[in-house]
Length: 212
Image 1 (cartoon, rainbow, N blue to C red):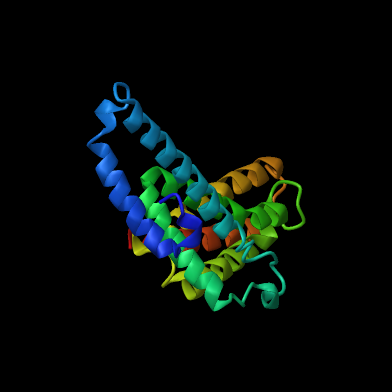
Image 2 (cartoon, one colour):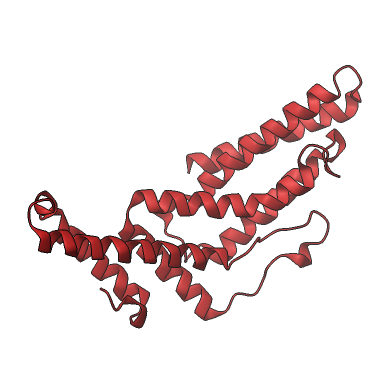
């Protein structure tokens, strides 16, 4: 396992699962047998190296949607090598355990929602009731891109669309509450009703996606 950098990640994932399964049986001896303690320390070091490697692989993806105006700015081209690397990185992440997968997924989603915050957050250009539709258009493009590019890359067990929809709705809720408080008593009624209708429709769509 110490030569993991020289091996295909898919093979490393299999080895890591095997080593982790074996180490479970020796955990109780780590404080009494120095040799086992040393092996455990080396395995833990390799696990940390793999975590950083997997995180770097996902950070290379970048932000998939960074505009509300020009769909052509979506990231469209991923090399076959990058896609295989990401697929194998997912396998390694699963071998590292649920907590690593949870952290990786949270970081990836946070990265994808950064442009959303920059465009629609408090004080930003599109932080208005009249542009609520654009929020959902932006999100749908992100969802479609992930569906198209990562359907066969990220394992279904990660439920990335569920986690993404949940986090997007939470962020949007805070945005809209701030917006409503700032426009209390002065909001345009027609814009408010349109925003409400749009929000209810998309809430239903998001709920269906979460329940899948």
